[in-house]
Amino acid sequence: MPYGYLGQNQPNQTVNNSGVFSITDVAELQSQGKLGGSLELIEEINPSSASSVEFTNIKENKFDVHFLNFYVETTGSPKVYLSNNGGTSYITSGYQEAAQINFVNGGTGEQKNTSQTYFQDIGYSAGTAIMKNGYGYYYNLGNSSKYSFNTYHTFSNHPTAFISFFGGGVHPTAETINAIKFSVPSGNFTGTIKLYGVKQI
Amino acid sequence: MSNLRLINETNVSSFVNTVNITDIFSADFDIYKIVVSDTEPSGVPSTDVIALYTRFINASGSVITASNYDRANLVMKSENVYDEDKLANTSFLYARDYIGNYTSSGSVTYIFNPYSSSSYTFMLGQGSGGYDTANNRYRGNKQIGVLKQTASMTGINLYSQNSSYSFKALIRTYGLRVDS
Image (cartoon, rainbow over the protein chains, first blue to last red):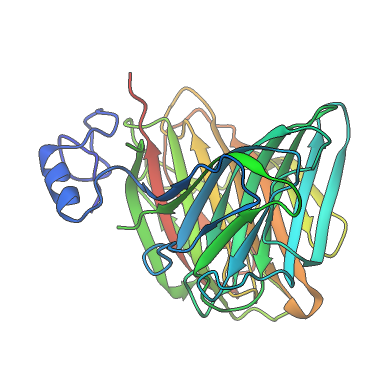
C-alpha cells in the first residue's frame, strides 16, 4: 500500500500534496512500527577517539538494503569489514573492489582489486587529521544464498587536494553477514557513524 | 523524520526480460529514488551478464524508444581497465545493474523532473554486480543520463539487453518530499 498521499490512496493521484501523510497513514504506519520515513536508524555511534567501532545488531533479517553514513576526522585510512559470526571475528580477505578516485587538482585513478582486504574504502590517509565523509549502500547482508554488495561515495579534504571516491565492492561468498566494523588500521578517529535500514513495505 | 516516501514496491518474482513500472511519477514530487535489489538471472551463461537497460514511460503508457537519450557510464572493473560508455541520441539509458552469477546485485538511481512537461528527465545512478566469478569480473558503475523530451513521464521500463536472458528483482520507488 502506498503512503504519503492525501486525497486518495493511490500513487497516480491528482492531488498535489508533496507526500503529506494522512491521519490514516500515520495510524497504520505507527501500528506497524514504520512511522518515521523510509530509512530506519539502526544505530548511531559517536567515538571521541577509537581505532574501530562495531555494529553487531544490524537487523539483517529485517532489511535487505542497509545505508551507512559517516563523517569522521582521522589521520588514518578507515575501512569497513564484514563479519559472519556476530562480530567475533571479521573477514579480511577475498573481497573485490572497483572504484574511481578523483583529485580536485587534476587527474583520476582506478582503484581495483580482485583480492581486496576490506569491504569498503573510506579514503586516503594523511599526515594530519582530515575529515572523511560519505555513505555506502549494502545489499543482501542477511541473505545466506546471495553475495553481499556495496556501492559507495566518499569525500576527503586531504591537505593537498580534495579527493572523492566512488565505486563498489563485493564479498563474493553466499552467507549471512551479521556484523559490520568501521576501523582504521593505524591511529584513531572521531566523528559519527550511522547505520540505517532501508524500509520495505 | 525521513523525507523519503515509499511510492511503489514491485517484486518481480517470476523471470521476465522486461518490466514496466507505471504510475510512479506524479506532480507530488520532483525527485525520485529507485532502489533495485534481490536480483537473479536466468538463461545467462556464466561468462555473460544481463545489463539492465532503462527507458521511460510517458503519460499515455508508451515506452519511449525514440533516440532522444544521452548517456555516460563509467564501468569500474575489479580485474581490468575501466570502460567509458558515452553516447548521444541513443534509444535507451545504459545499465547500472549487472545481473550475473555473482548471485544478485544492487543499485540506487535518482530521477529528476520526470513528470514535468516543460523540462527534460535526468537521472544518475550507481550499481554493484558482476559475472564470470571464475575470472573475478566484478563490476561497479556510475551513470548519468537524460531523456531529451519535454513531456510528462509517469513510469520506467527496465529490460535485459538480450531478450533471451531473464531476471527477477525487487524494485522500490521513493519520492523525496520537499518541505516548503
